[in-house]
Image (tube, rainbow, N blue to C red):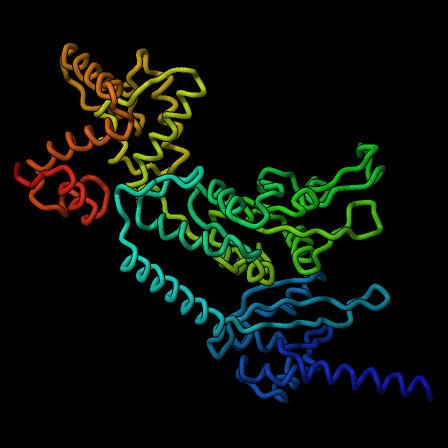
Length: 481
């Protein structure tokens, strides 16, 4: 009697779970026959609950209702699976399924799916709101060329980067997860560090982890730590993992798209529970950190390919920040070059200056490697310079590696240019900013004679047309002179 009551209670409990499920549940036997589905599945898959319970996942896949079937993948492999599906009704869903074994034999497959179509629409609306917010900032905060262009380690002269900094400053005091997106070398790590400095956790550690640099076999011990004797070769004292080291501070996970799937689920659990367990330990430890992640990959596509967990993706994608490549914010090049030149001078104990002709090369190059490529080029030019002037005309310092600076000048002209650059920097009472202003005026004056409009001049310089107008006005220059 008790057994029958227990069986009845189990059936009622299962039915209640199916009836109230927010996700779309399928229960399938080992042969692919659908035993039950949640009522909400009908709207997504275009068939009534009764019709779904009267067919198989093989038939639904063949008919295009499930494209493809995640349950069939589990039946084929015997392992959990997660895929993106497009249904017969045109909906896009994320589906995951899990095997159920009895006596070592597969007896059931439980799958659940979540409709992403409306969520994608909401994301598009959010992106539109972000663009409108940026436009609002542009209308009500006109950047001034005389503003301080440095924010900590950052150089932000361009309008788009000033807007980025404004948004990050607003979000930094919160604990919301920030996702830094953008090409390699655009400065994601520098911006992550600045978010930490602006946050209430600035007194804690900033733990920088490159997910692509840690071998998968060592990832768990490095991230979660281990107890003494947890494995062969383990330290006798044990070790706190990187997650623990970030307690009270900021954890920066660079190249998050390279995080192994097995670690993704464990990271998600830490984020959700705020606790972790070291290898070889039985007790959990509380951790509290601000999470900032970065990637140069399309995480949404990684999810569709099954290489990144959807639930982790949405857990991380709270404040997405896309850093534009350097070729789309050329106004920042001058400040970045000046900053790195100063770092090189301090590192090597010298006071070298840039030759005026360098600026044409720096501003016109596309810098496909972004800031990293620019800095590498400058260091190579600095080390190659025999005297105190970096980048004097010569065939060895082409940013593209093949073309030279405009050569063909006589030796006397080259030496005269070197002397002028050197004297301009060292003139009594003249600082670096004033010297750069003089070089800028000289460059603009030469280009106004050959460019008929401010738009043509802006395209040649790689800056915005309003910036050209302001610069010409500041230097008292007009086109055609």
